[in-house]
Length: 295
Image (tube, rainbow, N blue to C red; front, side, top):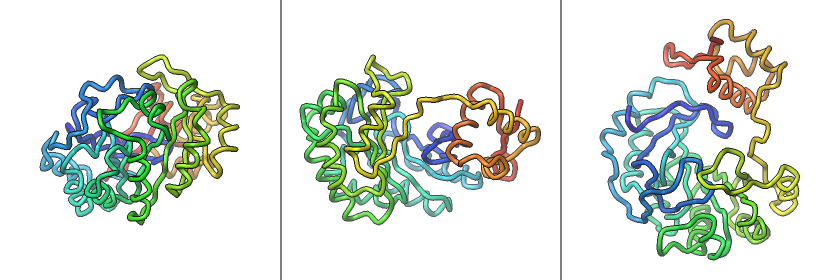
């Protein structure tokens, strides 16, 4: 399939079936920390970048597979696709799983974009700055984008949207951490259900630096009630690996593995992702369910 990928193991979303509505790196920002690489098409133009009918047809083909979220994300900014609302509406008729949208928030100043995104169950917007100067340095937006408009758009979206909002803040050393108190105030005014603080723990496109674990812990004093989501310890503890290897001598779903192993759900997802990436376990699909088994 061209526009559907996964399901991928996500610590935030569990088994996430991805929907990519844009050509590679078509985005309204060129964030210095992006893991995918530099933006090759920096634009604010909404368009029919890929055919809606093909995307909808591909969604129908995964409707019988078991996953936690259908997630609009991928290699660019999903709200740039002018048919996003139509695709979400069609997806609701085809699948019985919750729908998530991961967005850089750039188009939330436009009411019709907010209305389209509000058809999802969960929205994961980002906010990395509270001043235009910092916004330009960290997100390097398309011409005409103003951080004040984005913050106001997020506030408006909160008042209009009845689902969950998990606001992500990416903190980068020497670029935006000094603005943390201002970002925290803006985040508090948006009133998201969760504030999730992140930093650069995976190799970024450019040589920008993360905050240390201790520095991130101090950020929790500024962002009241926030949670940390970076994963500094990207490994499987020996005892957990032994437990998983013993259980996966035969195929097992993620839910069954988590239950049998006694691991937290987030850790079970993380460990399976590491082991799958390392080729030590493999997946298969049976009767619409995804099973994992040691190789």
